[in-house]
Length: 191
Image 1 (cartoon, rainbow, N blue to C red):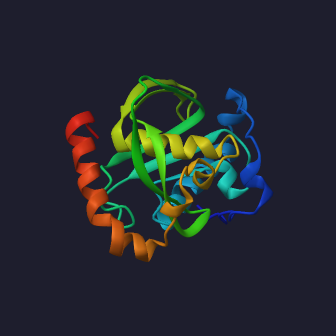
Image 2: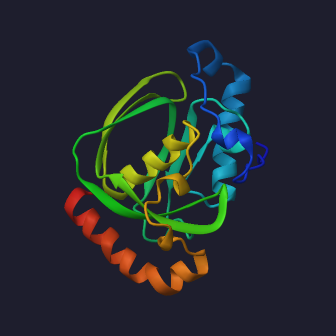
Image 3: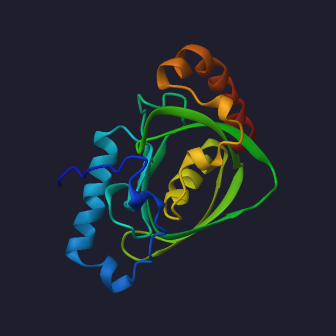
């Protein structure tokens, strides 16, 4: 499958609200090949997820996977998950501090507050229903990817711009504390 070009901040496609995908469209060989290309692109870039509008297709599709990712060594593993037309619903008012980065916003990280527990309703890649609860850091990953489908980047959710840092400075100044924070979240809410 071909590796797709990832749109960078400033490209208008990242600010588009993605359209829903119909079941007939979803099941076409071309659309299934597009999903495969999204997966390969995410893996090639060592991302934790990828939304379709990040690869210039404003449709409500995202792929998520964390498997001992060197870019995010503190994140719990997430099995490959394809979400079609996802709807996320916060299940509690508790939020957590999440240091986020993005393939579409190179070399920048910042603190975003995410719901600690969400309900995920979507289709899988074959149109079968998904209805599950996701917690902790994994819930943050799902929220980040689904924000893309509404034309939102993590930088829009950063409440304090003083938390912005490069990846290098994150590793030097913040990663050790953030790893402890993630460990506590996993212990309390699961992965």
